[in-house]
Amino acid sequence: MFTFIVTRLQAAGCIFAEDETRLLISAAGTPAELSAMVDQRVTGLPLEHIIGWAEFCGLRIAVDPGVFVPRRRTEFLVREAAALARRGAVVVDLCCGSGALGAALAAAVEHIELHAADIDPAAVQCAHRNIAAAGGHVYEGDLYEPLPAALRGRVDVLLANVPYVPTDAIGLLPPEARLHEARMALDGGADGLDVLRRVVAAAPLWLAPGGYLLVETSERQVPQTLDIFERSGLIPQVASSDELDATVVIGANPNGQNTRQ
Ligand SMILES: C[S@@+](CC[C@H](N)C(=O)[O-])C[C@H]1O[C@@H](n2cnc3c(N)ncnc32)[C@H](O)[C@@H]1O
Image (spheres, helix red, strand yellow):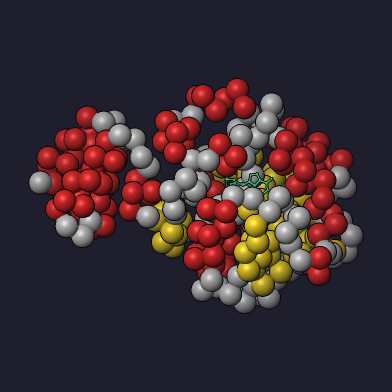
């Protein structure tokens, strides 16, 4: 059975066919369920949507159909945020998707006050499940709009992995993303930076003195991203990881002392 499934997955183009087979076998309750799951995988449904979870920063994150699957590279953004967040920090995970970033930061830093928001109701529902254990709050709406006004000027760490794929490049994404993740989770507008511009423009209103905004971006978008941060008065820095092929821009709110000790 194992070899038969591996062969089917390999023929369908799955690179990690053996690992995937193990995961499918352990997720299926019955042989019939396993067979249905393999069929779904062969047609290109992301493994995470089939088994219902993704591994992220060592955590098992629930991922419902259509919700953005947290990427391994985004673990770098969490790592950078964890280095800046102190115990008790007020953290907002904007465009939270499954809530993976907030959940991982809550696991890495003690007693953070966690808030997360997304415009997609399916993502919000999923995030509720993932950050409930950390006592996090989840809101539904456009960027900052659903956040409680009381958070203004109090946010120590603002995480935002926004959609940043240029519209014309969506067609070049692997089918798993293009066909099975919500378009609004991927499409960043003509240059990929539309949502990012809106997030950065309003960030100084929400950040505490000395607070930080962290966004993931592509290497190609770095010069424009730095310019966008500077225009809004944040002091940007670039961090990158060759290992995870990840680039993060970190903007410090200059009004006050940094929270990093
Ligand atoms: C690239 S996904 C990232 C999800 C999650 N942060 C992660 O890294 O796994 C972008 C998310 O932004 C959300 N989004 C897009 N436009 C938004 C908006 N205007 N307001 C709030 N969320 C938005 C999408 O629904 C999607 O969940």
